[in-house]
Image (cartoon, helix red, strand yellow):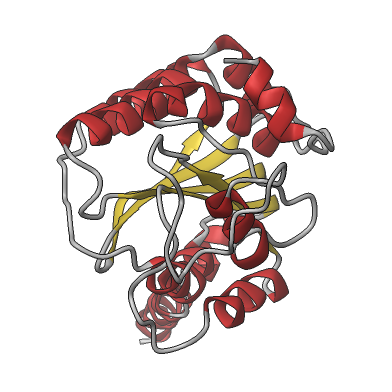
Length: 260
């Protein structure tokens, strides 16, 4: 009977730990340098061709030798990687996976390429960030030196969210998260009530909106893509900065333009 009670007690202890958000598994997991959430806009403006440019850009970035070197070169020798696609609502399309070597990175790239296109109508960025704060970040299965959410999209939040995006952004920062932006600047002029007014010689309105409403946390930055064809270059450069933990250069937009 003593042995039975002891066994039942052990089972209950494990079950309690698992139900409390994976604490038991997280405490036993090997630490990582970065826990990276890559979130991509799949709203109405993202047709099949644009979707493929995003997925292929992320996959090629994961296969890039410089990115792999940044992933494996930290003190813990690896990262946790996940992906969210979002439009009217977010979808956690790649739950947390560990990337600690080239084979892991190549396998992750193939998973990205196989993701089906799940579209939507609106650009509900606030809902995505709320989901990340409440559901994704608490499920990180290992201790991470940095937690980063990478937000890309071709427009501002247009979803009439139940709460201000700044409120959710600030909650994430309070929970130790850095949010970086990758606005996709289209050839069409930025216009509309949701964007700041264009200033001659200033930053494009969508880039400025990302700086005011999205970017936040230690070492945060905004790195624009100059159209969907430039997404691969931008996400690759962004990954290197994010997973290595180095501070971005102050003239990042100019550097990005020169790198095209």
